Image (cartoon, rainbow, N blue to C red; front, side):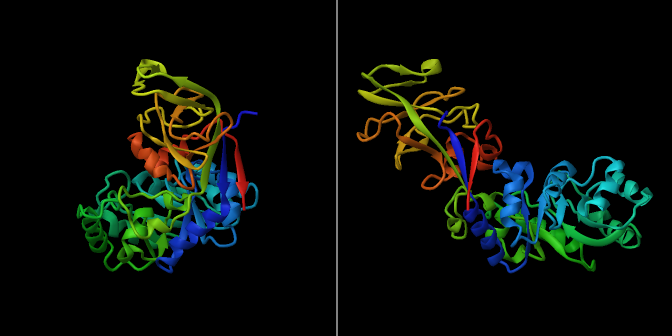
Length: 356
C-alpha cells in the first residue's frame, strides 16, 4: 500500500478545545466546518461529544452529516440557510442558524414552523463580508425579539485582523460592536481562534475556536497561548527512492532546483494530489526520521524530493513527516505563501487513521 497517510490525534484535539475553554471559562462552539478542516468532522465531533458545548458548521449539509450518526449537541449554521425550504429541517434537527441578510429575515417571518428557532444575528463591524450594518442592527434585533418564530437571540460578529494585534483594527471592531449592541440584552459571540488566544477582553459568552482546535497557530509570530497547542494531524509518508547526484544537476519539473554540491536526493510518496502545496518553495522544512530536512525541486502530483545529504542514516523506507509533531503546519504554509487552513482543507486521497 502507498505509505502516504494522515494520523489524527484525538487526544490533542480535546487538549486544544479545553485550552480554548480555559482561557476564558466561557462556552465554546467547536468549529468543525469543511470536514473539520480536513480532519474528519464526524470523528472529531464524536471525540469532543463529552466536553464540547456545541459545534459550528458552514451549512445544513454539514450539520445533517453530524446528526445522522447521533451527534446531539447544539449545532450552529454559520452561513444560516440558503433557501426557505431548509427552515423546517432546522426545526426537525434542532439546528441554530446565523441570520445575516434581509431575505433570511423575511423567509423566517413568513415560515410556518413547528417550533421557534435559536437565531444568531450577525453584525458587520468592519469585515464587510456578511452581516447587518451597525445602523440597522438594533432595529432588526428588536424585530426578531417580537417574533414568535424566534426562541432566543445571540449577538455575533467576526474579526478580520485579530491575528494582527498591532493594527488597531480589532479595537475598531470592538468599538463598533459595543455601540451597535448597546442596550440589547442577550449573549454575544465575537472570538474566532486568534480572538480566543489574543483578545481576552472580547471573549464574551460564546467562543468559536476553529484552526486552533487542530493545533495550528493563526499567528505569524510566537504567541504564548498558541505555543500550548498540540498538532492534531500527523501527515506521514516514506522515502521510496534515493538518487546520488553530482553538483550542477537539475531536479524535477522546470529544473527549478539545481544541486550546488554532490547531493543525496530522497523521493517521497507525497504530492499535490494528496494536498501538499505545489507552490512550496525550495527549502521548505520536512522531517525525515525525525530530523529536519528540506524540499528541493518542484512538488509533483504524487511525489516530492528532499535533501538527504546531511542525513546519512536516512534512506529507502525512512519515515517522512511533511507536518505534525516537530513541524507545525503553520510553518510549512508560510513557505508556500499559504495558511494552515488551506493545507488541512486541501488534504485529499490520503487515508486518515484516528488515535485516542
